[in-house]
Amino acid sequence: MTRPARTRYAVLGMLTHGPMTGYRLREEIRGTVGHFWRESFGQLYPTLSQLEQEGLVRRGGDAGRSDPWEITAAGRQSLRVWLATEAESPSPERNELLLQIFFGRHADPGVLRGHLARHRERLEEARAHYAGLEGLVAAEDSPDRTYWLITVRHGLALVGAGLRWNADATALLDEEDPV
Amino acid sequence: MTRPARTRYAVLGMLTHGPMTGYRLREEIRGTVGHFWRESFGQLYPTLSQLEQEGLVRRGGDAGRSDPWEITAAGRQSLRVWLATEAESPSPERNELLLQIFFGRHADPGVLRGHLARHRERLEEARAHYAGLEGLVAAEDSPDRTYWLITVRHGLALVGAGLRWNADATALLDEEDPV
DNA sequence: CGCTCGTGTATCTGGCAGATATATGCTCAA
DNA sequence: TTGAGCATATATCTGCCAGATACACGAGCG
Image (cartoon, rainbow over all chains, first blue to last red; front, side):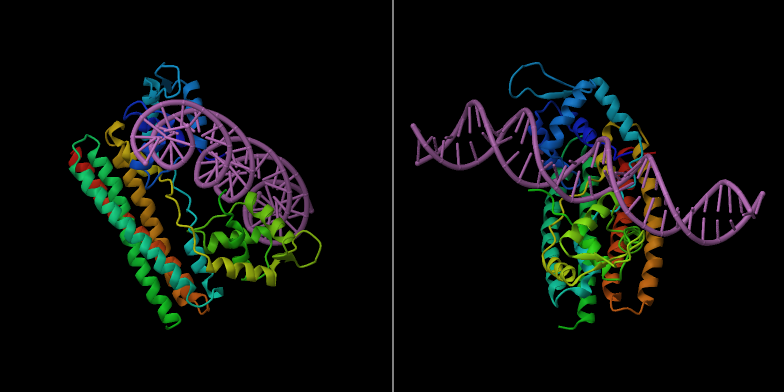
């Protein structure tokens, strides 16, 4: 078989927040689950059409350009079923930086240290971003608050681990090839 | 544009370890960089053909079934160039478990805690795996040793962070919905 | 009036995963 | 000894998905 299509569940889930156009759906996804999920228009629009055919979403009925999609009762049911199924253990994601390090012996001197330094900068930006997000979510008064907080904490945990690893890796490289 | 093709660099890099058939290439990839990189045959064979056309790899010349591929001088040069280019900051990886948690309010009670428990088991297996790997690599006497060790440490760092997050998340869920 | 920018829809290309089909030679056990 | 399994090996197909691009429309602003 092929990869299970999961775009549909992101769509159905976001539509529980209210009716939205395809464009707004994507913006919402970027703004909320964007740090661990992404969607592209090229995937979104065909998925919406298919969900409509299956009766999981429908349009308000205002024919026209910006007629928002809403989730149906069948859609909510489908979402609940998916929530109860175990997420496939994700096959390892491709990490290009690690691949470069693995073959690092063939790199010119200093190249890897440069990659690590830039990687660290990105992580520090991400950490600041998550810290701000954590404050926002913690201040929310929403039944979703705890769930959202858990996803933000995940980002913080990974970024922290990444920073510690980055320092460790830099130290190991310095040992290998002293400056 | 489209996503940059990175399969080629995994191939070129692995071929620095010596000539290999397509099949063995994939096995080597699984056994060494498998925890942060994956390749499928469906991608590997076309890539090898293309690399051959570009003169970055060649076959030994033993016409026949298991004629191994080897990297050419141009291939090594291409690898070095790639090593010096900054890896694209990876766009966020899709994390289905986090998506389920984000929409967790719509799940039946206990469902998320079950997902987290299974997730924790998988992480603990992974941690044991990495710990063994770390011992093996540390005992290696190879010029690649430090580089390989850094990639293993990355796995350990992420798994550790994952386990701490998992405990944190479970506690937050228990607060939300006491057992 | 023309410009930019946000909103909105649609489509194409190409990377890639996973499945499947097929073939060969080896080893081990009935 | 035969035959069942298994590792080795190559090839191809389907379908998910990202990223790019192209096109509209309207609002604000100069």
